[in-house]
Image 1 (cartoon, rainbow, N blue to C red):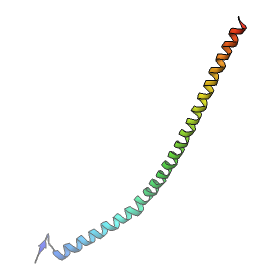
Image 2 (cartoon, helix red, strand yellow; image 1 turned 90 degrees about the horizontal axis):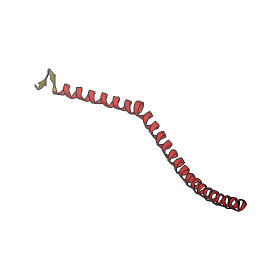
Image 3 (cartoon, rainbow, N blue to C red; image 1 turned 180 degrees about the vertical axis):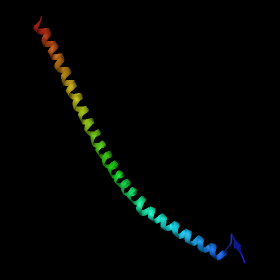
Image 4 (cartoon, rainbow, N blue to C red; image 1 turned 120 degrees about the vertical axis):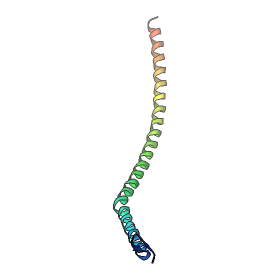
Length: 93
């Protein structure tokens, strides 16, 4: 008969089948008990990143509008400053 380490070929096939089955059960347990919560957390994190990117785009747009307004106010202040200088020159002549 064919034997390896005191076990027949049929016994080895049975042992390998049982070990393979148990490894499959353990991998399914890990998939649903360990990795499933991580996948849900990763989906939530991706959703949070999308929301954050949308908020960032909105903030950048608002910042551009604010910069335009500040530039306008700066030009107005420059004009007022020139007018005040001219008024000062006329008063102290």
